[in-house]
Amino acid sequence: MRYADELKCAMNLLAKDPRVIFLGQAVACPGTAMSNTLTDVPAEQLVELPVDEEMQMGMTNGLALAGRIPVSIFPRWNFLLLAMNQIVNHLDKFAVMSNGGYRPKVIIRTGIGSERPLHPQHQHVGDYTEALRSMCTTIEVIRLDEPDDIVPAYRHALERTDGRSTLLVEYGDYYSEK
Image (tube, rainbow, N blue to C red; front, side, top):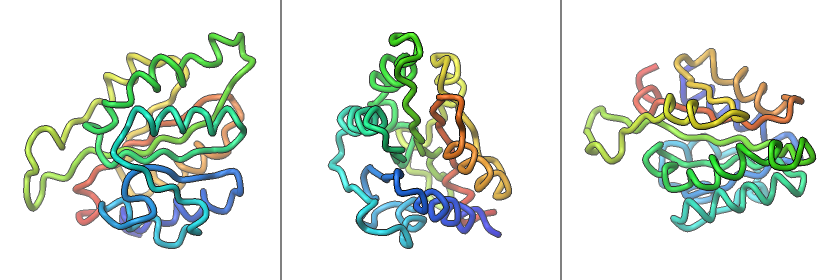
């Protein structure tokens, strides 16, 4: 299957778990290519948020601490940068700060902005995968290079039992190219 189709399958797989909730901008309303991958997810699992990335990641952390499995969606890395405090100083450190007492599971979904057919300029096409890997000790960062990588990576993020969260990086250009 194609890259975008695999993403849709992965989101449907996640949605089958009643603990999963999707949150972010253009989650319950159309607006990004990622929105198209959520069209079959039940509306009660979609939480549309305003553009406030720090708040979104704080809500994500709280939902995870309460036993939910939030899928927090940031359409591009450049937007995710605004949530780094919540990711690096909180989510990544919960288990360490609590001596293993809190091990919330979060799935973060972001993308490297598409450059084709129109380049949206540099504030929309960043890739900070390696930078985040170097800052975090408990969050696994997975880059989704091929369509066949997608469903297994999201299944791994959902089913993992090691107390780690997962950040999955998509490529915007691959939605139409692969």
